[in-house]
Image (cartoon, rainbow, N blue to C red; front, side):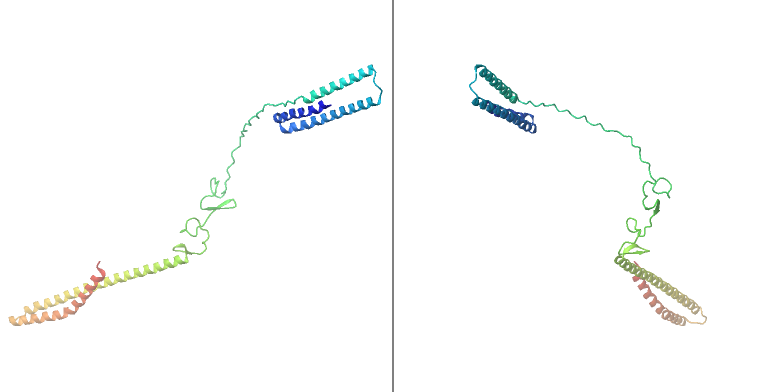
Length: 275
């Protein structure tokens, strides 16, 4: 009876080795199964011994034949316990199978037909797979966009917020418009001043020219008078000289104011119009 109990630790040690070799889950399960079977067999043997002991105490001494039969039964029981111990002590050898690698899947090559191109602009000749630049899609037609602000990069179908649409400058802000208008006013003023100066220079030039012509006419008039005086008959030399001096004086008096005005205009012309 003690041999059955001594075998249990041996079985547990053998199964603990099985745990290490064959895997934790399987070994624990096997230990529990073997422990249950061992407990059942030990309990059955104890029950048999108790029955034998009880029978021996309640009966008379055995005869030789009965004692031999009892000995035979004990021998059989002992043999059965040894066989049980050998069976329980047999180690469980786990079966380790070599890993089998799964076959590598081969890619499946499919012949996918190329997509048929779609014409997005049915109103434009030719195939248009995308909307052309400067157009927008309206249904199945491509409509050309109107750029209201050509001075701004990109197409502006609407005037941006905070800007004004002008004929001369495109889309600009009010501040920019004020600056441009001020510059325009200054430029127009400068152009007017230049035009006025040019007109004035032309006028001064004309006055100087007219004064020169008038002086030449006066000189020519007095030249003729001097010739007539010099050729007058019955005139002495002193009378002739007096007449010429008188004519020169008259000519000077007539030319002097014209020449003064002419020099004034010439000086102003040189100051304003030259260089």
